[in-house]
Image (cartoon, rainbow, N blue to C red):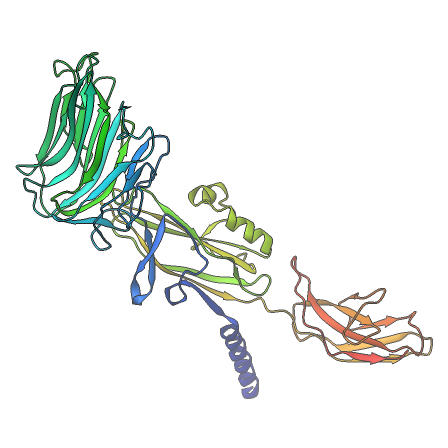
Length: 494
């Protein structure tokens, strides 16, 4: 009895050890980086353990060709604005540390500024341009708002018959308020002379605020908003109220340069001017979700078993990370799923294919794996989630062992009998016998020959005196059969 118990214990230890031996893991992110991962509205940032985490991109302005007149993301020095309508002359340094959106901001220290010269016909500051609706907006971080700091300044000349008149637009600080002044910009058909001024609440130092000025040409409404909230409204009409008699903006014969940040100290980010009345503009840092998908991960063997999937992430507030996986034995299918992945819509359209990490069962198998993830911001607190790494523990579905000790003999009736020791792999359901006339080349009519269950076979019809070469593979009988390596090769002359 003691010997029997010892034998059982040894078998159990062997089985447990074999499971540990063949279990493997695979990591995406962390020390293995995010190589090959396709990211949408996501970027890498220094994270846990000195490795790179994934976080949402900060909301950044994009150019709409049909309406954008000026677009300055302030991420780096460039020769033209993003709309392509203006040549950039003087410009300041760009900060990678203090910014509101994108990857940087313009840094002003009273001595520098940005100059823009209209270079495209139809742009708002091109000669003889009639404006309709427009919107000017930017993020501003003043060090200490004071008089003499000009945020926007433009001067030009127009002609009315034989008379020349000056034009100007000025956005500057007075008593810590941003004041917008328009001189001879809004004009009636019979006279270019006009002056309108609008200002909002006091601006606090050392904090980011979003400023927007928008104009509705149908009503003459000029509205100033701070952080998306109305701060002041006036009407460019003959009596200052909403009416059908509207003074409309126009640039005259000789427009000068548009100057941004003259005498200002602080930071500016995401400057935009559009040829439309912008109804809604998000002022959040994180306005859109993001998603990513890994490269196709090869687990090397068909029907490898997924044991567990885990993700290390941070989800402050109500931010969230949702990891998914897709497993298949077809490389072509995996590549197609990867190319067509569109984040949330793909997951919702095919829930039977894209499974949450928590849904791992006996059927979670495949050779090729995709890891995907959806990241959502906390819209109330304006926070981004972070994803540090994703880990897979799996057991490779190793191929069966080939048979051993093959031997062949001729029978008296001319048949050739081959015998072999069965494969040691218990899941084997049959064998494939390969044969041919050259070593390692098993090209011959009837090769390979399928043998189910048995560990021998009979062959006839082979030419006498000719040398033949034989090798055998084991196979499993699952829906996706696996094949062993070739056995030792033998040869014989019938």
